[in-house]
Image 1 (tube, rainbow, N blue to C red):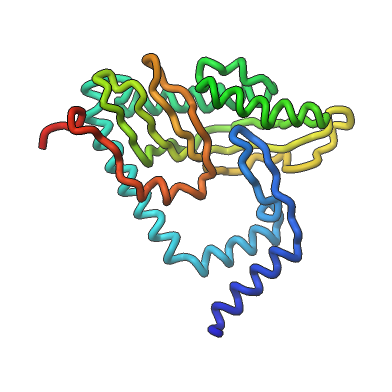
Image 2 (cartoon, rainbow, N blue to C red; image 1 turned 45 degrees about the horizontal axis):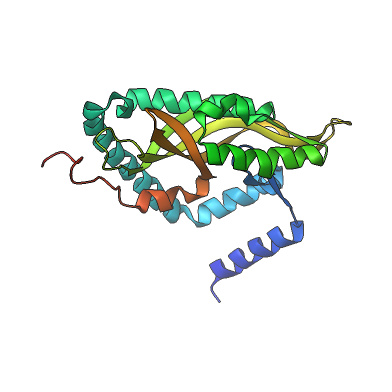
Length: 239
Protein backbone atom coordinates (compact mmCIF):
# COMPACT_ATOMS: atom_id res chain seq x y z
CA UNK A 1 0.00 0.00 0.00
CA UNK A 2 1.32 3.43 -0.91
CA UNK A 3 2.16 5.98 1.74
CA UNK A 4 -0.61 8.30 0.49
CA UNK A 5 -3.11 5.48 0.94
CA UNK A 6 -2.00 5.07 4.55
CA UNK A 7 -2.58 8.78 5.13
CA UNK A 8 -6.08 8.60 3.67
CA UNK A 9 -6.85 5.55 5.81
CA UNK A 10 -5.73 7.39 8.95
CA UNK A 11 -7.92 10.36 8.06
CA UNK A 12 -10.96 8.16 7.55
CA UNK A 13 -10.36 6.36 10.87
CA UNK A 14 -9.99 9.72 12.60
CA UNK A 15 -13.36 10.85 11.27
CA UNK A 16 -14.99 7.65 12.48
CA UNK A 17 -13.44 7.92 15.94
CA UNK A 18 -14.75 11.45 16.33
CA UNK A 19 -18.25 9.99 15.84
CA UNK A 20 -19.71 13.33 14.80
CA UNK A 21 -23.44 13.44 14.16
CA UNK A 22 -24.69 15.39 11.14
CA UNK A 23 -26.87 18.44 11.67
CA UNK A 24 -29.94 18.94 9.54
CA UNK A 25 -30.65 22.65 9.46
CA UNK A 26 -31.22 25.63 7.20
CA UNK A 27 -33.42 25.76 4.11
CA UNK A 28 -33.18 22.43 2.33
CA UNK A 29 -32.20 20.52 5.47
CA UNK A 30 -28.53 20.59 4.46
CA UNK A 31 -26.19 18.26 6.33
CA UNK A 32 -23.42 20.16 8.10
CA UNK A 33 -20.54 18.23 9.64
CA UNK A 34 -19.78 19.80 13.00
CA UNK A 35 -16.23 18.43 13.00
CA UNK A 36 -15.19 20.89 10.31
CA UNK A 37 -16.21 23.81 12.54
CA UNK A 38 -13.57 22.92 15.15
CA UNK A 39 -9.85 23.77 15.06
CA UNK A 40 -8.90 20.13 14.55
CA UNK A 41 -11.58 19.77 11.93
CA UNK A 42 -10.26 22.74 9.98
CA UNK A 43 -6.74 21.31 10.19
CA UNK A 44 -8.00 17.97 8.95
CA UNK A 45 -9.87 19.68 6.14
CA UNK A 46 -6.68 21.54 5.16
CA UNK A 47 -4.74 18.27 4.97
CA UNK A 48 -7.45 16.70 2.84
CA UNK A 49 -7.38 19.80 0.64
CA UNK A 50 -3.65 19.42 0.04
CA UNK A 51 -3.99 15.74 -0.85
CA UNK A 52 -6.81 16.40 -3.28
CA UNK A 53 -5.38 19.64 -4.68
CA UNK A 54 -5.36 18.38 -8.30
CA UNK A 55 -9.04 17.50 -8.00
CA UNK A 56 -9.74 20.94 -6.56
CA UNK A 57 -8.12 22.56 -9.59
CA UNK A 58 -10.16 20.35 -11.91
CA UNK A 59 -13.42 21.27 -10.17
CA UNK A 60 -12.53 24.96 -10.23
CA UNK A 61 -11.96 25.07 -13.99
CA UNK A 62 -14.92 22.82 -14.73
CA UNK A 63 -17.20 25.17 -12.81
CA UNK A 64 -15.53 28.23 -14.34
CA UNK A 65 -16.28 27.14 -17.89
CA UNK A 66 -19.79 25.99 -16.95
CA UNK A 67 -20.58 29.43 -15.51
CA UNK A 68 -19.04 31.15 -18.53
CA UNK A 69 -21.13 29.04 -20.91
CA UNK A 70 -24.33 29.63 -18.92
CA UNK A 71 -23.82 33.39 -18.94
CA UNK A 72 -23.23 33.28 -22.68
CA UNK A 73 -26.54 31.47 -23.18
CA UNK A 74 -28.31 33.84 -20.79
CA UNK A 75 -27.05 36.79 -22.80
CA UNK A 76 -29.08 35.52 -25.76
CA UNK A 77 -32.06 34.41 -23.68
CA UNK A 78 -32.18 37.85 -22.07
CA UNK A 79 -32.90 39.33 -25.49
CA UNK A 80 -36.02 37.18 -25.66
CA UNK A 81 -37.11 37.67 -22.05
CA UNK A 82 -35.62 40.34 -19.78
CA UNK A 83 -36.15 38.12 -16.73
CA UNK A 84 -33.33 35.94 -18.10
CA UNK A 85 -30.81 38.76 -18.48
CA UNK A 86 -27.98 38.25 -16.01
CA UNK A 87 -28.40 41.50 -14.08
CA UNK A 88 -32.09 40.82 -13.49
CA UNK A 89 -31.44 37.18 -12.66
CA UNK A 90 -28.72 37.97 -10.16
CA UNK A 91 -30.93 40.55 -8.46
CA UNK A 92 -33.92 38.19 -8.28
CA UNK A 93 -31.94 35.23 -6.98
CA UNK A 94 -30.33 37.30 -4.22
CA UNK A 95 -33.71 38.71 -3.24
CA UNK A 96 -35.32 35.25 -3.09
CA UNK A 97 -32.36 33.83 -1.15
CA UNK A 98 -32.64 36.51 1.53
CA UNK A 99 -36.43 36.34 1.77
CA UNK A 100 -36.45 32.56 2.13
CA UNK A 101 -33.85 32.70 4.91
CA UNK A 102 -35.83 35.38 6.75
CA UNK A 103 -39.00 33.28 6.52
CA UNK A 104 -37.09 30.15 7.57
CA UNK A 105 -35.66 31.93 10.60
CA UNK A 106 -39.21 33.00 11.50
CA UNK A 107 -40.25 29.32 11.26
CA UNK A 108 -42.94 30.17 8.71
CA UNK A 109 -42.24 29.66 5.00
CA UNK A 110 -45.68 31.03 4.21
CA UNK A 111 -44.06 34.47 4.52
CA UNK A 112 -42.03 33.66 1.40
CA UNK A 113 -44.64 31.50 -0.35
CA UNK A 114 -44.65 33.76 -3.41
CA UNK A 115 -40.94 33.04 -3.85
CA UNK A 116 -41.10 29.26 -3.41
CA UNK A 117 -42.84 26.59 -5.49
CA UNK A 118 -45.92 25.26 -3.71
CA UNK A 119 -44.70 21.68 -3.33
CA UNK A 120 -41.28 22.70 -2.01
CA UNK A 121 -42.76 25.15 0.46
CA UNK A 122 -45.09 22.51 1.94
CA UNK A 123 -42.37 19.86 1.93
CA UNK A 124 -39.87 21.96 3.86
CA UNK A 125 -42.46 23.28 6.31
CA UNK A 126 -43.76 19.82 7.17
CA UNK A 127 -40.52 17.81 7.02
CA UNK A 128 -38.27 20.21 8.90
CA UNK A 129 -39.79 23.26 10.60
CA UNK A 130 -42.95 21.63 11.96
CA UNK A 131 -41.04 18.56 13.14
CA UNK A 132 -38.49 20.67 15.01
CA UNK A 133 -41.33 22.59 16.63
CA UNK A 134 -42.80 19.31 17.90
CA UNK A 135 -39.40 18.52 19.42
CA UNK A 136 -39.34 21.94 21.10
CA UNK A 137 -36.48 23.08 18.87
CA UNK A 138 -35.97 26.24 16.86
CA UNK A 139 -33.64 26.63 13.90
CA UNK A 140 -31.87 29.99 13.99
CA UNK A 141 -30.72 30.66 10.45
CA UNK A 142 -29.43 34.03 9.28
CA UNK A 143 -27.53 35.41 6.30
CA UNK A 144 -24.77 37.98 6.62
CA UNK A 145 -24.12 38.77 2.99
CA UNK A 146 -24.09 36.84 -0.27
CA UNK A 147 -20.61 36.48 -1.71
CA UNK A 148 -21.49 35.18 -5.16
CA UNK A 149 -24.25 33.79 -7.36
CA UNK A 150 -23.14 31.61 -10.27
CA UNK A 151 -25.33 29.83 -12.85
CA UNK A 152 -24.11 26.24 -13.31
CA UNK A 153 -26.78 24.59 -15.39
CA UNK A 154 -29.67 25.67 -17.65
CA UNK A 155 -32.76 23.67 -18.50
CA UNK A 156 -34.74 25.87 -20.87
CA UNK A 157 -38.28 24.98 -21.90
CA UNK A 158 -39.68 25.09 -25.43
CA UNK A 159 -42.30 27.63 -24.41
CA UNK A 160 -41.99 30.91 -26.31
CA UNK A 161 -42.13 32.83 -23.05
CA UNK A 162 -39.64 30.38 -21.49
CA UNK A 163 -42.20 29.32 -18.88
CA UNK A 164 -41.11 26.22 -16.96
CA UNK A 165 -37.39 26.84 -17.48
CA UNK A 166 -35.08 25.93 -14.61
CA UNK A 167 -31.61 27.15 -13.66
CA UNK A 168 -29.24 25.77 -11.02
CA UNK A 169 -27.23 28.43 -9.18
CA UNK A 170 -24.20 27.94 -6.95
CA UNK A 171 -24.64 30.46 -4.13
CA UNK A 172 -21.89 31.29 -1.64
CA UNK A 173 -22.95 33.18 1.49
CA UNK A 174 -22.04 33.81 5.12
CA UNK A 175 -24.60 31.87 7.14
CA UNK A 176 -25.34 31.36 10.83
CA UNK A 177 -27.14 28.06 11.34
CA UNK A 178 -27.97 26.24 14.58
CA UNK A 179 -30.71 24.47 16.51
CA UNK A 180 -31.60 25.55 20.02
CA UNK A 181 -33.99 24.40 22.73
CA UNK A 182 -36.95 26.80 22.83
CA UNK A 183 -37.24 26.72 26.63
CA UNK A 184 -33.60 26.75 27.72
CA UNK A 185 -32.23 28.60 24.66
CA UNK A 186 -29.33 26.14 24.77
CA UNK A 187 -27.70 25.40 21.41
CA UNK A 188 -28.08 21.67 20.78
CA UNK A 189 -26.53 21.56 17.31
CA UNK A 190 -24.51 23.94 15.19
CA UNK A 191 -22.81 27.22 16.02
CA UNK A 192 -23.86 30.83 16.57
CA UNK A 193 -20.96 31.99 14.39
CA UNK A 194 -21.26 32.95 10.73
CA UNK A 195 -19.52 30.60 8.30
CA UNK A 196 -19.13 30.67 4.54
CA UNK A 197 -21.27 27.99 2.94
CA UNK A 198 -22.17 26.93 -0.58
CA UNK A 199 -25.65 25.92 -1.66
CA UNK A 200 -27.14 24.97 -4.99
CA UNK A 201 -30.52 26.60 -5.49
CA UNK A 202 -32.64 25.42 -8.39
CA UNK A 203 -34.94 28.18 -9.58
CA UNK A 204 -37.96 27.74 -11.85
CA UNK A 205 -39.53 30.38 -14.06
CA UNK A 206 -43.28 30.10 -13.63
CA UNK A 207 -46.12 32.57 -14.19
CA UNK A 208 -43.64 35.23 -15.19
CA UNK A 209 -41.47 35.08 -12.08
CA UNK A 210 -38.62 33.10 -10.56
CA UNK A 211 -39.34 30.80 -7.60
CA UNK A 212 -37.22 28.42 -5.55
CA UNK A 213 -37.90 24.83 -6.58
CA UNK A 214 -35.16 22.86 -4.83
CA UNK A 215 -31.99 23.15 -2.73
CA UNK A 216 -29.00 20.83 -3.09
CA UNK A 217 -25.72 20.61 -1.21
CA UNK A 218 -22.89 22.69 -2.63
CA UNK A 219 -20.76 19.56 -2.94
CA UNK A 220 -22.86 18.60 -5.97
CA UNK A 221 -21.64 21.61 -7.93
CA UNK A 222 -19.34 19.50 -10.12
CA UNK A 223 -22.21 17.22 -11.13
CA UNK A 224 -24.26 20.22 -12.25
CA UNK A 225 -21.27 21.81 -13.99
CA UNK A 226 -20.65 18.62 -15.98
CA UNK A 227 -24.26 18.38 -17.14
CA UNK A 228 -24.91 19.73 -20.62
CA UNK A 229 -27.33 22.64 -20.80
CA UNK A 230 -30.70 21.94 -22.39
CA UNK A 231 -31.55 24.62 -24.94
CA UNK A 232 -34.39 23.68 -27.36
CA UNK A 233 -33.77 24.23 -31.07
CA UNK A 234 -36.61 26.74 -31.32
CA UNK A 235 -35.03 28.80 -28.54
CA UNK A 236 -31.32 28.48 -29.29
CA UNK A 237 -29.92 31.36 -31.39
CA UNK A 238 -28.99 30.54 -34.95
CA UNK A 239 -25.26 29.90 -35.34
